[in-house]
Image: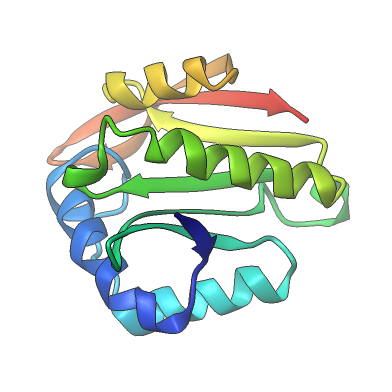
Length: 161
């Protein structure tokens, strides 16, 4: 089931997101998130009308998706960037696709023109997933990320709503 996230989901999200922050290239960020920070981000995005959803099965939160403005300023008001994270037990079940479809439908209804994705060039699974969802690679920015003691390339992908 896909539903709007609530503050009480934040601890479950932290439980599967923080290992990916700490141990993977899913994000260039290396600072783990507290449940309070996640709940604050949830409230901010929902308050801005952007939304924050979770995938849940048998009462357990298994993944989330959210979006916010791609860059600051009025000129970017119709271009968004999303985050989608699944816990390990959620992968390969279609939950990522379901979350992304809800997110894209919501963004389309909100008048968003472009959804952006920033993906580490070494995250082959993330690149394949976005391609399968209809995102198109529009550029590679060399060595803009730094994690695990090395510089990393960022691939920018976009989906025209």
